[in-house]
Image (cartoon, rainbow, N blue to C red):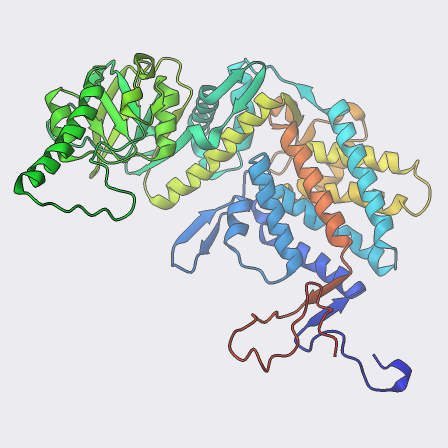
Length: 554
């Protein structure tokens, strides 16, 4: 800046880079398109896998949008926020992570011509918002159907359409059974409030070896532990289970404790006190006659001796999360102090406790539980990479089942709902006056990216098939026609039985359009290097930039 033709005034620090105006908006569009192109081939049943190497040399093979983008390091700030939305989608509904990125990229791409024609971003954003509201409204009222959650066959079919696009689709029925059984086990109905906590109570244990067909859902829990003493029983039927959160060792002082001993007998007395303490604790446990005790802390040798003598099996240092699962499975209460133990704290819901050896490791099973509210999914497979991918696919399948139970509405899959909405929005756009009509139409055309990508990924002829599908959707009754992702032809999704949960689709559209609106609103990017104060050379450093990079005035 040269005020009055004099000396230039430096507002921003020299290290700061600033871009503004049209250049930034077009840059954001390009960044969004680039990220979308990375995972475009990961959509649909003919999806390709991506192989990513992390800095440690480990590899990830997957076609899950979120897992891919999590591993990629990007520079551009707009690209970073694109990666963020895939994570949001994964946490919120657990499925549709690939389509949300592709849609967001396309929403940005269709706004490019308007930006080049000098249309103001807020006009585009207003049209996008209107289109989003209409879209969700039309989808809920015209194109969704209610589903009966109690019918197992219907549920399996819906989970199948989620699993169909994954690596695990070869073992489709097995995966659907596992996902459905696990979700129904952990569903809690309390005072009319449904709670399905898959993350905490449906644990996936991956054990390399065997074949994928050996995978199953246990009616109970398993964990990677062995009994503490070799003479303890490794198989107990109908065990009485006690869960503890305290250590069965002599408690040491919190801080450094020092004892001064004047007589020799005092030393023996101290040792005796320690033994008596452990004996008392074990006595309180033995009084309730449990068959199995599990503690999150340690068990000393002396305690093991007393427990083994009373024919009680002990397992130590179990994770807190595992302990919570055991409590939910067998109905026990986790107790913090042994002197507060009561009969009702003992879990009697399990039918069998046994320790099995798989490979080199010992695994403890607590199974045959009556009405367990937690479960373990045992996955077997050839290698670690396959197991990781199967686990990711199962998580998506379980989330899909959870979404339907929480919100039992379905919309047709295979790009059918996108095509139907695209047609409905195009018709509605004719009634909109003014310049907003064009961005509104652009949203309608952007939705076609999903069926188009499905055709591309299985090698069909894109233009011919898409035109045929568009012609089909002119009649409102044909809203369930979409793309067969295997062959690239158009089929009726009702006959083919491919349905998506409404919750997933609604979240996908909301997230993708809102991200596009957010990125279009940006017109200035200031990236400055902020020097750490008091570091090396702090004295000579140029004035540091503030939060917005407009401090250090000279």
